[in-house]
Length: 524
Image (cartoon, one colour):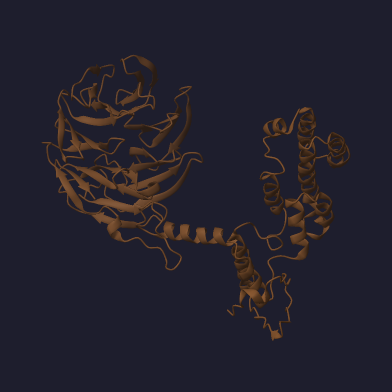
């Protein structure tokens, strides 16, 4: 591209698509653009240069390309809105290719701004004229017109701005109006604001979405090369092995602060591990049969454990003591989950009952009739999900009502809720892992490759914004898929027995796996 010196274009004006001829005796050659895409790009570059304050460079580009950002009519319209020249604004409407069905709406929006500015200036006579003779005859949004009429009673400008939730003529209201009006015009007539920046951001986000190992929050992307994260950024190496348990490890969970890991085993014990010291902090003994499930309290000071011995136990994480035992279930307890207040929790059992407890041990509610194998509660405490054979039942915890049902193709062995609260992950005994959209009750994606048939396997979502799906497997491996693409990206080995559970630690960019080989592996 030929760049002219800034003094050669000082005081110049936009060309509106015509060759600017010569200046100071020198011929200014206009580049012939060959495709519509090139013309679009030049206009976007002009807009971007103007956004950055490089007005002289923008003028030079317009002169050399023979293309302007917008027509004089659009420029006059833009200035009219930003400087409150409402007569000019309405006069130009017929030249802006606005669809006939939208023209009345556009007029309403313009006159609404005009009316509010007159009320702000306390020019009530002109404001009433606009209300009665300009807004009223449009016969649009009668409710809004009535609301606008009430603003006449505002004693001062500040009261108006508060009541109307409007920041005034000297604020951003005119710029906001311009952006709103722009939506009613062809994009080629008035290019949306900061369009090149938006396109570049979209391109970067698309590259991140397609990056199989994207797992970092810092913005280290550049426009100079395509974005691609190295495999080394994913925790795919065993860094520590915990081998305190003497039998199969069935369940693991990181504390919310990421500093501890708790494990539940068939050996009837629970272990709490410090990830700061990489050592065993407590061995919790008291259950008489296998420990099937555990849950950290929201503040990480307590640990709730569930067992095949029909009991739930509440443990003090600091001391390792068990101050309370809960004994309402009559068969093995399969799952438990805290509500966000840290004072209530739910538990499920093969005795076909789900109980809502308070921390003192009182039953607040009972759902009866289904043999629940797993359950979870959304982070906001609004929804409880319970697994029953091939079904995933949804309940609202406020009114205790069942609100939905998802039916799968095979038995569900576990459920995990995503960070967004709208998606859930379920493991099936037919060797598939499924991601569901709860709001639409729609199957989003299937993940295949892991082996599962005889055992309960617990998968999880992990990584930055839950980018990954991780699952254990009966072939002793851990399978990792890219969530959105469904591509299997890792088959991690190391365990010598069925991998029963995996869980992700978002605070430390690591995950843990638990196995029938009695060990827990930390991957980093």
